Image 1 (spheres, helix red, strand yellow):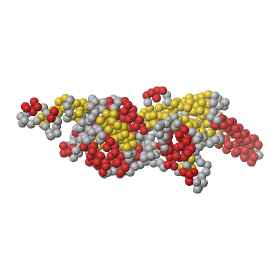
Image 2 (cartoon, one colour):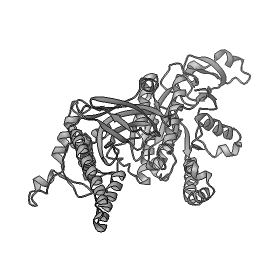
Image 3 (cartoon, one colour):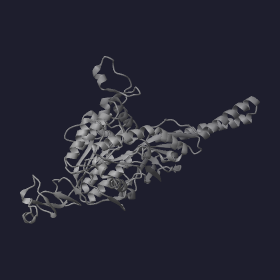
Length: 580
């Protein structure tokens, strides 16, 4: 889509026009025809330059200029990582018989794709191409797009200019930054699990098999097969003794990630959710390398993703995909858009990227209800044909995910298209009660694995921790022996560093953070009463520091203080950083 189909005066052209008119008027006023001739010559040169440049512009609309870009092989093989610069190769092809001059190129992409370099002016002779490299910085993990670029053309003298938009999509799959590997020490689980494959954790079991750990007195309910008869005969008090056995088995870990709107505040790349993704990958890597099992749940007002507990490289790849997916949410329960706004966003993309016009020239008759049912009204008042939008999207997705056993609805089709083409939709805010029920639903799913270690990553803001269902879910977790750990990102720690380093900015941040800090402190007290062990973190903290901080503090507690919380302690006794 072009900003204008006709050339406009550049700064130099404006100066020349002003000088030419001034000299023409001055020469006529004072009777100096030589001055008037100079002014007339300047205006003639300006008109001739316009005609010559207009010919080149006409070739532009006939698609005689092509823009292509791609990622170098080294970047695709190593993978793209957030906050790591990446070079994109760019090629401009001039297919016309006339020479073109490119004075500026500006890219359009997702919110977190930032250019770090500029393309120098390029001369494109007839039937030639020019290559350049553009350095980009992607500040967030996820699947992002470069949608196209605006190319500004000028004439040889720099008198006229024209800006045109060239759609050329490039998909960038960006992974979170890696953190140091966490080494989880062997620990004991209070409740057995059904999985009996060998892992890194010792599990005390009441069945046969395994190594003898200790002898203890018989308790009602113990199997008679476990009674050590010879030891019982030698017992001084004559009471039956039971063998306590243990063996190596798999431990189950569940990551619960809060993807709510409070986790998405701030500058892209410095969100609490950005750091949470890094923590999830770091923790998952340590769990899977230790031959344990891992599950993942992303939630807000309801569960968004649920990855059942598993192990191996396949689960690690699926976890990475789920984590990247939470950065670009299109589900109707999580997006704050009306039906008309959704159609307007897709129609704008079709118009800019595919040159498909779906706007109606005029309204249908007022008494034609069937015709109005096929019209979507944008917030700007534009009327959009629903039928044309759906048909265009279905045709563009013919070879993509729309092919399936059952055809999707119009709403599902449009949201699928938004995901495939990188159309960003605004994330909605859920109520405190809804968010608490979402957390409760996530905890209930985790209780399917008794004895699992649950790690909740949430800032706890906007959560009604007095919700009865949430309390019931936590009680169920404690009855089934789940370890509960909450990693809480502090809002103030994720403010821009430039603001905190400035004296006045830091003072203002302190004042405006009072309310959020009070809310965070109250939420931490409430969730601690429910049975969670809470660790406050900042953007520089990795899981090695988080776990060592938590359990270093836990070991120093008094026995009376630990007695106030009867939930089982998490089964991650310590952690040590290791090179990633």
